[in-house]
Length: 322
Image (cartoon, rainbow, N blue to C red):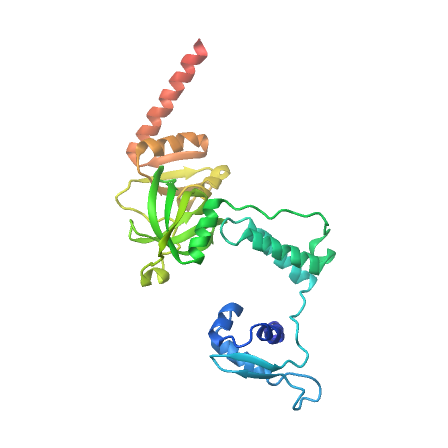
């Protein structure tokens, strides 16, 4: 209970300088920016009427004029500036910002860098450890990611060139951006794919090129609430399904290829499944991973991998005899 009360107190104390800086803002816009519901915001504003300076009479208490259409502070009771971050809060915020900067597309890196610099300057040594006078160039962002973020911000459609790891193909697609999301430490563009007529996730580092279109992004209304919208691996029943066993020291490959875990074995290995387009590509992937992957099925893939492995061994042995 005390944690909830202290959290609300901090929010209440920050509301006054926020509304002083944003006079006349609507309750809907303010609640969206502050991350609370409109009902919670109106409850907070009603509570602020009871807060103020000792004496707690007219001229001592915070005074506001507010409705759902407009909110203004008419008397601040001296609460004119936002609360300062504690050392712990500043450190946590810096860590979060630096983590976001490392995730392509999640934030504008230049804006995040400026925010980091301001927090470090305000918090001092306690938060940043060893502040330096050396000017640090803001992190760069790839033109492709910048185009994706820009189109999303302006609600425009995109033409993208995308590499699909499971199909080993590069395709041209027109998509309607919905949002950028972080899944398993990877940044994805969630968008309505006009060709597939469904919501898909496009890993940002696999978008080879992006061009912002002039037409508006217009995903179907139901796409925004699709329960499967964050599913990375939309199975296509028309594609064959590989079954593999991944060794414990090779589980990193699950971060790079669209594999679904099906079970964990006693030795720490993981059984996975993966859709693929061609035997040629899937067999090359399995062989390239060496002893880290064992193919269980389908039979055609097992045969292809076996034949290729034997052919490779024959070539190796012949070369060794020369």
